[in-house]
Image 1 (cartoon, helix red, strand yellow):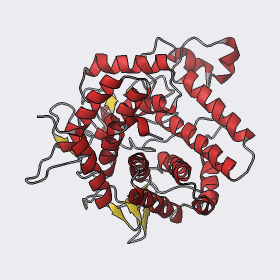
Image 2 (cartoon, helix red, strand yellow):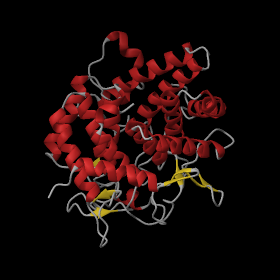
Image 3 (cartoon, helix red, strand yellow):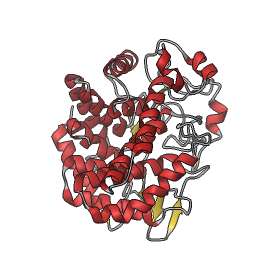
Length: 398
C-alpha cells in the first residue's frame, strides 16, 4: 500500500530536527561506524533541504554544520569528510581524502548566504572558502580545469573508479558558481573565475557527452585521442572521461540536469534511457551491477573501510538510494516531466517508509536492495530525509 508523500515530508522534517545538535546535523542518530558525526556531504545536502523547506531552525543548524566544518579545516584548505566535535576526531577520508567534501562545503556556504544574506557569516567563512578554491585548483594537477579524483575520493568511496569523474566536475562547476556570487558580494573582481566556470561548463558538456564538435569548440576537447575513442551516440552522460569506464552514474547524470549543464535534449535522452532500462522502478546508484564474474570484481572487493558492503545490488553496487531518487524528481520537474516527477515522489516516499524493526514507522534507510527492495544500510539517514524533501518540493531547489 502506498504511503502519503505529505506525511513522508513531515516525517523527514522531524528526522532532520531530531538529528540537529549544537554542531550541525548528525548523519544519523544510529551509533554505527562513523554515522553519528557531522558530515560535509550529508550535512550540506540536509542543509539544502532545510532551505527548500523554509524551516528556519533547521537553516540555523545548517549554519552550525558549516561552522563546524570550517573549524576543522585542514592546513592546506581541505574540508573534513566528517568530524566528531565531542571527541575532536576528524576524518578527511579513509584510503584517500574526499574531494567532494570540499566541493559541497563551498556550495553549502554559497547557498546559505544566498538565502540569508548574513554578511557576518560570509566574513567568517570567506578566508576558508578561498583556501578551498585554491586547493581545488591544485587538484587539477595540470591546470586544465578538470579535478583528478583518486580512488575512494568521493561519495562512491568503495566503487572501482578514479580520474576525471563527472560527479565531481559538476560539483566543481556549481562550487565555482557559488564562489563567483560570494566574491561579488565581497565587491571583488570575478573575470578570472567567470571565465574558468564558463570554460569548465563547456568542457564538461563536450567531453562527457562526446559527439560531433563544432570547429570553434575543438579547443575544449580535453584529450583528443581519448575523446575520439569515447565518441558515439550517447544515451547518458559518461561516468568518467575514461575509455574503460562506461557505467551509468545516476547521481552525476541528475546533477548534470539540475545544474543546467545538460540541455533539454540531453536531459530527455537521459530520462528515456532510465525509463528503458529501469522502467518505472527506483534508480540504482550505478548500472550495471558488478558481479563476481565481472572484470572489476577483484578491484571492488579490495576496497572497503569497515566491511565489504558492495555485494551485487547492495550499497553503491546497484543499491536504490532514496536521496538520489528524490533529486531525480527535481531533475524531472526542471524539464517539465511533472507526471513522472509525481511518480518518483511516490516511489521515494514508499522507499523511505520501509522499515525492519518492530514499532519503527519510518525507516529513512540509506538504500534498498536493488532486487528485493528490502531496506539496507543505516536507518534514520538525514540525506534520505533530504531526498524526501526534494521530491516533495522539486521546484523549490535553490
